[in-house]
Image 1: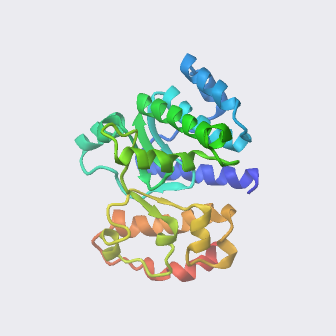
Image 2: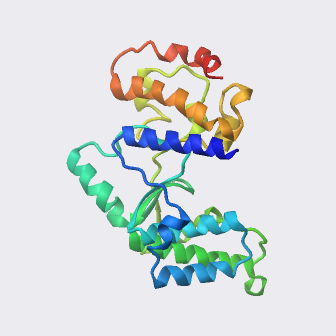
Length: 263
């Protein structure tokens, strides 16, 4: 993807989250650096000792960055909201600002940090746990046998450990619609909104792999086309499942033929 492709996707990400009532903020290394405390600086110093490239370092840095800005909700820039996360104003106020599961770190896609919530302390604890996990798996002197490691691989281990712990570091709550399930080649109807796989899903993840698996024209399968796919599919979803959920909208039958119009 080019810089322009990234910028276009980020612009769409901001727009769709704002339309859903959120105020999205983009975390940048420069913007977060001023908020780092001694604990964060110690984390970054330890991270720098690992044989990571710039991309791997970024994957781990975002965890301590979220702790440094006070915790909150983190969404990848190819994740888009589908419906209100909570049914009532009081539930929204309680969970959006105080976070679900009493502030414990919660993944909403298993197992990937594509949509995550948690308090500052929960993010900090997870950051250090992921760092220690990476050290263990990369260090051959302690039994590690890997030459490449990411935060997602570490999350798999943390989720396994948390499943048998009385004080789990990470919780999993399935609220994400995989992009390939949305792009299933079928006509979307109002009745589908509360059926599997759409039922109780808060957001959709149009990741690169979902474009490869989804039923879309071959011309749209490259990651740079995530913006086009999102801008096409999300308005259809909103018309059927948010604005006129109980109506028989005529927008859905045009799903497949409209792909040709957005190329």
